[in-house]
Amino acid sequence: MRWLSISGCRAVAFGIGGSILGAISTLAQINESSSLPEIEFSQLSQRDPNPLGEKALAIHPEQWKHAETEHFIYHFVHGYVATPVSVEAEFHYRVIAKELERAQPAGDIKSHIYIFERPEEWQEFQAFGKLEPWSGGIHSAGSLFVQRNPAYKFSNNLLGHEIVHLVLHRFYTDGIPCWLDEGFAQFISKDARASYERARGYAAKPHSEAIPSQDLIPLSILTATTHPPSDRVRIFYDESERLVRFLAATDKPNFLSLLDALARHQPLETVLPRLYSGRFPNIAALEEKFREYASKDFGTSLQQVNN
Ligand SMILES: [Zn+2]
Image 1 (tube, rainbow, N blue to C red):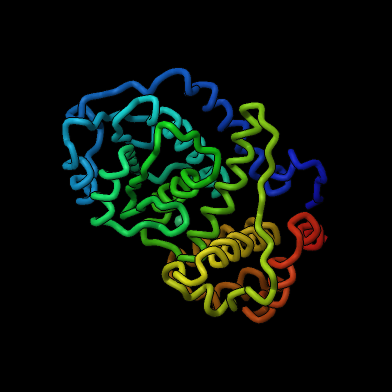
Image 2: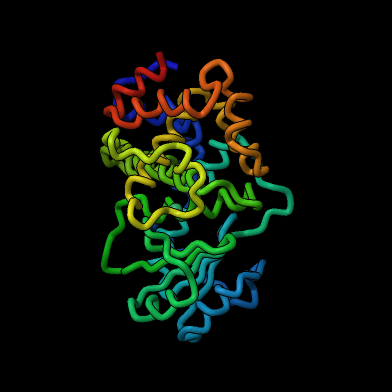
């Protein structure tokens, strides 16, 4: 795979570019000026079996409105807050389904997204769930709970990151390792955010954080961690993102096979040499190459991977 130096083509170099075309046409269909049509709760096509959903809707029950798109169901207070969320959610769904080269799982269910606005209600709800340190959202058993301030225009990948978790959960219902879940969520949402901005006419390119090599968490620890360590949150997310990016850039088909195997709870130590036999016969060999990649400048290290 050849490295393209034009920043606008960076996503293309990873294969995300192909999926962007379909996603952009979705953007054209649901643009933010056309409001999400509100429907009665009783008319929703599916109910959320997650008890946290019931808890959310019990907070000022009279305020909640509801809507539905192809893959998601929304519970919200104002349509003008929910509409851009729905655009971003469907956009990410398409990008991820294409990235994973997967059709929608048979009998697929829709993911529920709850959008709080008032800080005091959000704080009240937080007692019921565990906040993700990165995004401040709560992702639980396939449902997402977020706070959006209508006065603030979001321009980062935090919502996208959470939506990637929702979609991954639909494709891998038994769960995947924490580093892979968080790393993939960062990897996709950063690239998708840049593409999304470009589709709306802004100059944007994905930004992957380089990590000083002395700060890197050893892969034996990173890949065994079951939740982001509170004292090294930022490194954990950045390093996981780089590891996913590195494995995907090294060999995309084998990266997808790796994802499938880890989702079946097979150990990385046995899966890695089977799928990346020529390059990484063991985790130590991966670690050696990865340390170099993780700590070097994004563009430079990519060129090295591709050569
Ligand atoms: Zn996350």
